[in-house]
Image (cartoon, rainbow, N blue to C red; front, side):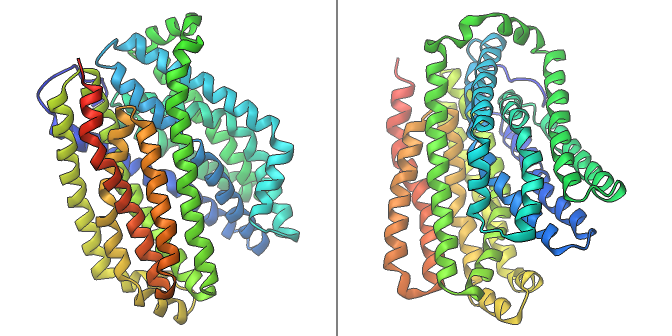
Length: 445
């Protein structure tokens, strides 16, 4: 479905899957960038270079994930505008997203001499690994303007339900990145610099393709008009957009601190527990990438219902997505319950790590059920621009998480994963209790 939906009181249950499934595939395709880079660097046969790519991938994942609020915020506001002012207001939202993204990119580039060494230092790299990581990072860092612009442009497409286009662009981007990396790093023998340049070129190409698609498409005329209308960037117009994105940025920071605490406390349990928990975390990421499809669907569909002032549809979509999210979570939990052992064994470097992973494998089955509702409610809150409440819920859940980490420390590794599962469930619980009040406020006459 590549066109925005007209306002309607009839719920489009197919639209949930029409948005969620491409989003799931897109998420997995995006995650494969790091896998492709690691495969290429593995062919170089140099351990420091492989370690450097791992550090570089984590560095930019950390830096750019924090900035992903730009995509999320744009999606919700575009979805709302689609049922009110339609193309003109959607184009204005995109213009604000691009302006804010450009400002962020310029700030990142200005801070590069101080920020990049500090980020590399966080990972503790030394010697040849640090030197190689610096080569990769110095090149890829310059893609920041394109990355920020792509966040806004992709958020615009998602808000307009153009998920098949988003999927096509993401797959093409990944294939181009992989092909360029193989050619530059292996064919031309550029080594790690070739991998950095492949990421940079692929990001620029993605920007050109997505921007061209939008400008030449159905919303191109409205966007060209928005470019000429300076009033779209007045403070009164920018302030709501900045407020939404500020809250989303802070929410992401709190979440990242919570995840960092899990890694840090895993390290205190010893190298075997750290390695086993690293496997668990990667499997959680797979779960999150899939359940995030329902977050995308909620952002768009609930944003549209709010824009159409359709309170009944807004509430019914929440229930519909919770049930579907639960279904996917139960399937994931069943798969983990059946196959966790062999999967852990395939990732584990030593028998001790595999044994520790198997001992705590029950948490792999618990986490999808504990976390699915948080993804749905995150999408609802973003789609409705309830971002201040979203931030408050995240802070409250993180406070509970911190207390549980302390209280459950005597339980060993089970205590860590019990606390993490509680963090996911608490986020949803704190959001659920606010839905009725926030709905009444948003739909007040």
